[in-house]
Image (cartoon, rainbow, N blue to C red; front, side, top):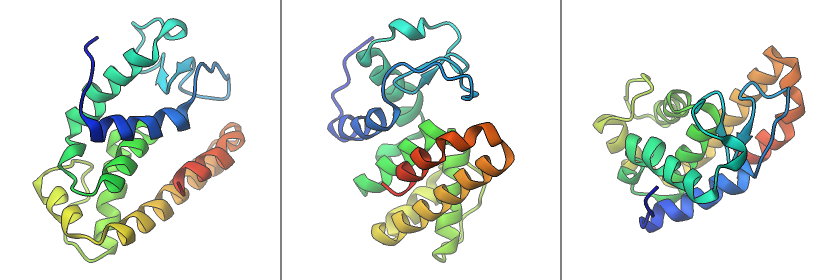
Length: 166
């Protein structure tokens, strides 16, 4: 895979990799076998156990950061947070939480899970510190809901909450 040179992305992916860690094959995790946060369930064609860090970075750039245009978000901390949430929760959920946060802050955006021009414009007008605060609350609430519905996931709740508030 090619080498990524986007400096904002490279800083953001370090946050993601720090949260995701290396190889895991925990039976309580519905993603199954995972390395660097790349799961067998999402990428059945990959040899997850031998996935390199560089390959994971290239996948994150292609399938997340570029695909969803997180670089369009002016505030680097907000872009990083949405990217990190998308990796952990799935893009549609992370994007809906961003939109819910914007609605909470008074921006009339559709909550449709798509980061289009309306969502980007509102996110770029919002106070980044307040937006991050609301995103953290919503992420924590999302994780609590998962733990309540899926008892085997409760083992991950402390780590998820740490991630939500970082």
